[in-house]
Length: 268
Length: 257
Image (cartoon, rainbow over all chains, first blue to last red):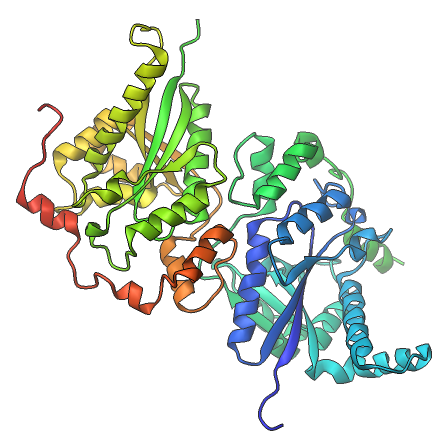
């Protein structure tokens, strides 16, 4: 068939989701509209992957709660879902590994769909071959905010080869707010510049800054967070009495997992 | 002995074209703020969509705007929609709407509390609005001076802004508003959220998603009735806003009559 082919895309968002807010959900909607507007993509699924407790971020509450809140928030969506794999791992998992895991799962699902060969090793080999070949058929892209893009520049936060894998082999969809300049950031990084074609910048013309930090702050102060996140999530928070001054102090004196891991490696 | 809190009802007038999560946030923020002053007990909230005769560009039929607001507020246990203003034959001045609602609130209150119980403070009705509202007082012909006086002096304003100082500056720059500054309550929403009904309509025209900006039930209603198209936005395009015409013609009864 002549003419351009449409690439199927799955969007993957990694983060604390502490808690999930309407802004997180909006990111998916904006990304989908943007990609499909190019005429080159069809977004078929969205995956929210809350980080594991071992990330050790200040104020991070238990993964089981964050998973359930995310599940409640995605209930009304017919294409965005929550995935627990990352949060169930005993150690913190690098984002590149999470991307790799989900990409492999997606490929396998595609394989199973049209594969009659049940010999496991042949299937595994086919998956590895298709890891590069299938790029035109299905793509997994990491969905994030401008702050994640800019975190690529923070020393010891990311391994260079991980960044290369994410933007080189997969893709990045970055939702920006009006006060940041992602293009400049990309321009100033040789690595990002090399893969600029795989970085999709979605300009959020209408600022929507409902951050989880703000939500937690309002909750601590007994202020209303209604209409900033789904009612079902608010109800869950109240029911389980999450987000207090105590919960915000969790991990206060602990070093963030990636910094701990990479700083340790570089000193050896 | 601690002073009893004044029962307070918040009234929001506007197009609600359509109602969004941002509108409903105004009520939540205002309630939290007025409670925290220690002087008020917010007992109710009223959404009063403007009538079709307002003549604003892109305004869809009041029956739809009222229906959408009802859907949005179904899950609220303290804010309701009121159709009175939308059903009046002509556009109604904001103070007239306020007088109407205040009359009802007072009657209701007196019925439930008893006329002879003087120790309880009377209920109050204040207008809930966004920061840009204060700037509309400057637009020639849009407001009568005696109405502004009654609105801020007699009733009072609860003005929600996004952390900028513009509303306080607007009060400072107006002698009338400054005089009544004790009756203008400034509520700050620190979260920058520019999601307006205008943006929502724009997104809908372009076939873009508005999910999570307004309740699913309202989005469904909009699609079912095919509201907010390029055509709907052209409605009233060359019309003059009704207040500008009406207020140039005849005066309305003032409070002293």
